[in-house]
Amino acid sequence: MFSQLVVNGLVTGSVYAIAAVGVSLVYGILRLVNFAYGDMMAFGALVAYGCNGPLHQSMVVAALAGMAATALLALALDVALWKPLRARRAGFMSLFLASIGLALVLRQALLLAAGPQPEAYRVDPYRVFVIGSVRLSEAQTIAVATAAAAIVVVALFLARTTAGRVLRAMADDRTLAAVAGIDVARATRLAWAISGLLAGLAGVLAGLVEYSFTPDFGFQLLLPVFAAVVLGGIGSAYGALAGGLALGLAEELSTWSGFAGGVDPVYKPVVAFVLLALALLLRPQGLFGRARVA
Amino acid sequence: MTTPLLEVADLAAGYDDALVLHGVSLTAAREQIVAIVGPNGAGKSTLLKAIYGLVRPRAGSVRLAGVDVTGERPDRLTRRGMGFVPQIDNVFPTLTVAENLHIGSLVLPRAERQAELERMLELFPLLAERRRQRAGSLSGGQRKLVALARALVARPQLLLLDEPSAGLSPLAIDLVFEKLLEIRALGIGVVMVEQNARRALALSDTGYVLDMGRNAHSGPGPALLDDPRVVELYLGGSRRTASSSTSTSTPSGMNPPTK
Image 1 (cartoon, each protein chain N blue to C red):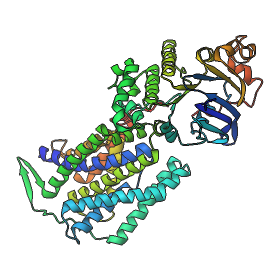
Image 2 (tube, rainbow over the protein chains, first blue to last red; image 1 turned 120 degrees about the horizontal axis):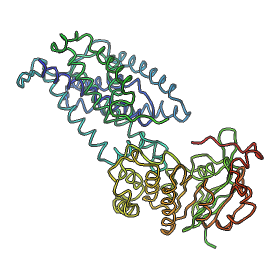
Image 3 (cartoon, rainbow over the protein chains, first blue to last red; image 1 turned 135 degrees about the horizontal axis):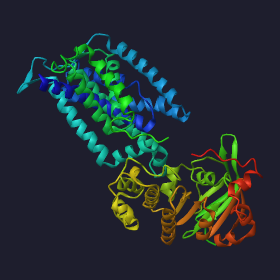
Image 4 (cartoon, helix red, strand yellow; image 1 turned 60 degrees about the horizontal axis):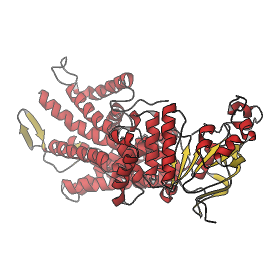
């Protein structure tokens, strides 16, 4: 039972982790809390569904299409919305409100385009892998394997590649990055593209894990993803990875019967927010964030 | 006569509706240290920022090796060979020392980056020991060296330094000023703004004294130190601090918003 919960937690947590890195990258560089991220995830999930369902493409092709489309959406939104706002020196609050507006527009557009009925990818829900005492559905297996690979790729990208270093440098200090000769506008586009790819991937994986999803399911994902970002230290990409995994594990393990009889699964989101509140109280800079010097 | 490395003519700049610089001119050559000194609010830092495109010039021109670069973006100026070391926030704190230098080297062709980085670590042995340490964990003086090395690794022709000694211990100041002489010996032109006017002028080939956003005096650095007018006004000849001597006489010479 316990090991099953750990595995479930890793499945949920890895989806949170991927999405949290996407949110964190953009926040780190633009100080933009992207409230529309959940709906960008839903967009990716729906594009992938369109390829996998009606167009009968394999899940891999569908996921790649969903990721690519979400990256393009992110870049287009930067050109159409965020860049003009930056040029007008929009403050933190204006950007935040703009992202809430964008989230509403995106969500309704997705509902209009795809309809309110739940969709499901063409995976066999009855195919189950048994490893010892742990049972994983095919969708969960795909999700956890893909997510693990994606996390390793993202971590290596940030740590080892020049582009990854540039993004971390931009997150540290945007002005200094320009002083050091970095083309800040180009690096910003790169951040959006990667954030979009991750949103698409996280959306597809969330759709797989939940089995069926509606076009507005992004909003329910948004809050745990934000909790993961804060838990890990806002703006820290490594922190977001750890925060996502920790949050997924905590949500699942809270239902363990050995833990004071366990929490009713309905209250899993509550666990997420109790953790968030505790994190803010005890370690406001997050697990990996650094304390800001005024 | 050859084209000067840096030629600033009648530069005017400011913040919002406060004009801070009212037409400042200066020239700098290769293998030369130029010190810009003056009381608080004279516009020293603003001058540097206006040259480097961090503050938009309202009038005047900046020429680098004969090319007009007035108001050009900082990243482009860095690519053209004008380096800048800010007074504060001058390193990427979560990146290691080596990563900081690597970011600085990105303006070079890919094949030359590693060699240049190694050369910098030779020039700054202190940093070589700490290459894997996060820059944010270093002391103020060590950070200043990281910032210098980060700017130098891009092989600039000209280096702009904003208050290189500010906030440093006396020992660290010695270290930084010593490095400036080494940097000059590399053939690089150095233009620095300094609060520590005595040290800066003693070291410099040319000194400029600014007052209220205008050129007040200029000449060879050590000669300015002996100039009674400069001593009286700005070097606290009668033990007055530089800032208090002007704030009484020039109410308009307020500090520009820093940052």
